[in-house]
Length: 169
Ligand SMILES: CC(C)(COP(=O)(O)OP(=O)(O)OC[C@H]1O[C@@H](n2cnc3c(N)ncnc32)[C@H](O)[C@@H]1OP(=O)(O)O)[C@@H](O)C(=O)NCCC(=O)NCCS
Image 1 (cartoon, rainbow, N blue to C red):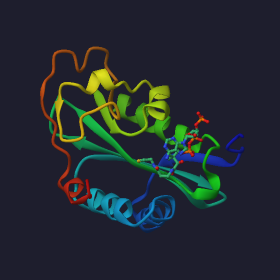
Image 2 (spheres, rainbow, N blue to C red):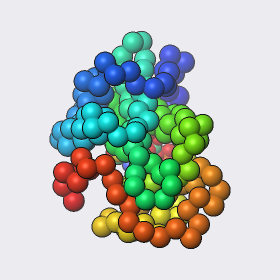
Image 3 (cartoon, rainbow, N blue to C red):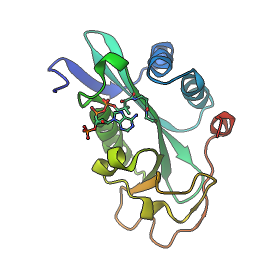
Image 4 (spheres, protein in one colour):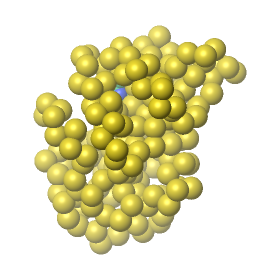
């Protein structure tokens, strides 16, 4: 299935946050991810926040936020696509566009917790995340190097923006 000719991906505007929260609340079971997204964006952390739009309506969102750990590292997530638009490549376009912006802006690596089958297609790999000291270490915790070798030899704590600690385990 194609995402259709009318879908555009671009950076979120500040006045679109409420619509973005609604996308997360509809895509996930509950409002934790909507609240997390709002809290991270409003906390002033450096973020890359990208939306997919169709006919003037927002239908998807992906958040990248700065981490304390290796130099210039981002966390990807949450990512959400409106339920009736899922499986049409919109998530892939959001993530691809966000990664492109991250590379342009000098970010060096990106970490994500999610399905390796899905995130593997973008180049995320569990072995690249192994140096990170986090409670959720395991095969679903992956990283991608925007600069080859960015994570080579790195070991240490990886600290997420404070609102992530409010998420249930
Ligand atoms: C995960 C999500 C963002 C993907 O966006 P999308 O536009 O549906 O994805 P795409 O069309 O780019 O890719 C479709 C692929 O994703 C897979 N997929 C869909 N939802 C998935 C999920 N929750 N976890 C893992 N894979 C998923 C599909 O099986 C499909 O795989 P295939 O290409 O091998 O057939 C979207 O489905 C969504 O919002 N899901 C609910 C919220 C969520 O679970 N977010 C991810 C955790 S942060």
